[in-house]
Every structure is written in C-alpha cells, then in structure tokens.
Image 1 (cartoon, helix red, strand yellow):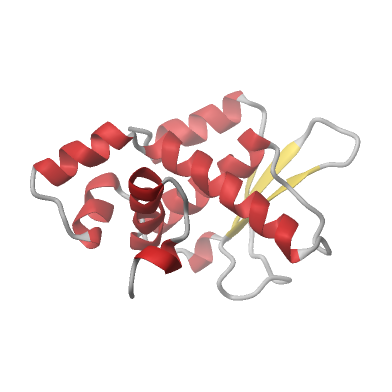
Image 2: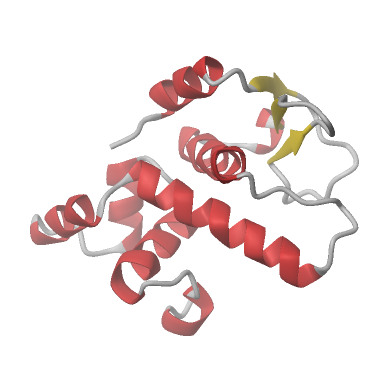
Length: 150
C-alpha cells in the first residue's frame, strides 16, 4: 500500500516539481492541479494545502495528481468536457491502483471493514476516494454515481 511520504519521494525522484500554493484562479473545491510545461519534459503539481483539512484529503489529492503525471493525462483548460472527464478518470484509476490492490481491499472487508468510512480510515484516504476504489475493483469502472447512493 502506498503512503503519502513514499508518494512524495517517488514524485521527487521522478523530477516532478511540488508546490504548496494558494490556487486563487480555481473554484473552492479545487485542492490541487498538475501541469506539464509545453515543449518540455517538466511537470509541476500545485497543492493548495490551505483547502485540505486532513492528511487523507492531502493523500487523496496527491494520488490523483500523480495519476495525471504518471499517465500523461493532462489537457488545456479550454478542452472539451469529454476529454477532461476521460483524463480525470484515467488519473483516478491510476491513483486507486497505486494506493491499494483488490486483494488489500478484499482483506480489509474480510476483517470486518465494510463501511466506506472505515475503509477510508484504514487506507488513509477520503470516502470519495474509497468510493472510486470500491467501484473500480467491484464493477470495473469508476461510475460511482451509478452504483452508490449518497
């Protein structure tokens, strides 16, 4: 299972620049973003830690942004919605698979962790991240809205 410290170490080893910066141009729900510089093999992940209340929020955000880097799934701000959604899902799949395996999820459930909050707590991520993980390993997709009620 990946943890936040090892994820930061991996990103630094990959040469990804990490910034803790306020993201004034984004909506309040945006906690992080990833950019690739045009014409260069340089990447930056910007984290707005002021918008993150817990370590689980930070870890979930860094996993997702690392997924953008690892898969190359970035897009221009003005890209069509379908392309943006495709890249977001690609980053989410990578993040889930990097954080935990299907076997780790199965083991947690077998040990009695059957509520989303308890799974999220066990793996150190948000409930939203855990919903995606459960959908990915149970249904083979990330369509949380189709399988889980809130």
